[in-house]
Figure 1 (tube, rainbow, N blue to C red):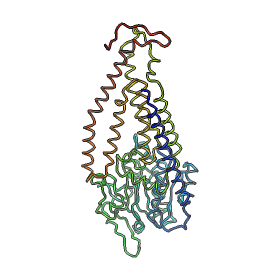
Figure 2 (cartoon, one colour):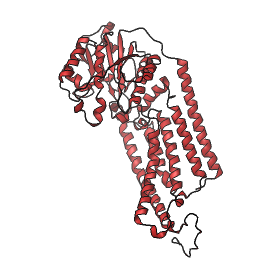
Figure 3 (cartoon, rainbow, N blue to C red):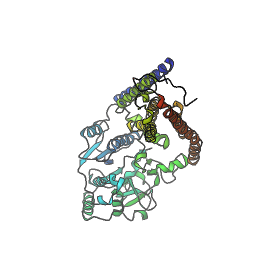
Figure 4 (spheres, rainbow, N blue to C red):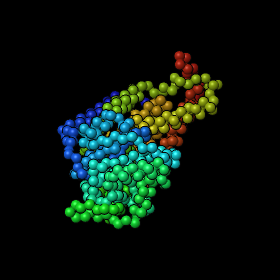
Length: 483
């Protein structure tokens, strides 16, 4: 397993090139942000786009980054309105300062509203406990209209015409219930106090969160007319349904791999999916093609300087692992076993095999969990593949396993990423069939690698009793089990 000098030099050179490239990208992003400078404070507008943030979930930082990217995307499309964040009082002060000074938001600090339906939220839905803080949007009486938005929206074009809608307007992405990821409202302290009273008396709530509560407040919205912006900028009165183009569910895209929603302008993409498939996670692309759209906006508006120190540290760590493993003598396991043949047993062999399998699984799992979650997908997958390769080489050298068999899964993952990222599919169905076809063709190779690893491990265990104990002279064997 000792690598030739040329191989060692290649590993070191590749690690150095990758480190320089990532460091250069980080420096470039810092330069772009510094050149742009913090957004200038503007005068108070009559209208506002508002989002909320609260603490207490395992993904607080991810939502903090998501809010910043979304609010900057509003400035990018030329939104002529204030950008307001309704933040719970326990949001870190440095986050509040960054959103105020660097992003130009107006941050309104509030106390969390008590959720009387908390006991109805089970399991993963506990993360929705504080979503009733959205009701504070009705208290923003400095504005004539407010568009309340979730952080998992991507704005494709200006939507200021929404400020012409009535007292409450929302989109139905579900046939029966409107979606509260984006809705228009007219602030009113009377309405706000009425909603607080409804919370106190425990108004019926179908899901225990903000959507179920607001559906109960506006039960007849489905029967209301569709919103069409009036001429000359006049405002409508009453309640309206918004066209689907203002809340295009990302799942609509995956069927044809392009947008064509006939209801209204195709203005806003929303991601009402499982939390682990939100677009800001590095693994969202190419598994979900739209993940790259969100990261493109972050790259342009915010950069990735915050994650770069961790990335550079991981690159250095993996480079050290590869170098030491290639330079070390193989057979480290020989120093760990009791080599008296009478001590060997099926239990010991079983434990060694289990340890080997767990080590291989860990080699592919550990890099996934230590990469910063909101890094760019290309950087994230590059770091994952580098980490899995480094730890795979380490496992191969430690347990005397054939390197190709250990890294077969690595090669299959690389191929799967290329298949998923291909831009030449004519539709989502073709893409899914291609992915399943690749998985079907890869399965025999994965099974063969597992068999090869177990055979190699069994051979090592059978030969193991003939190894000498550390410090003992080697006995003269008259025969070998293998001959």
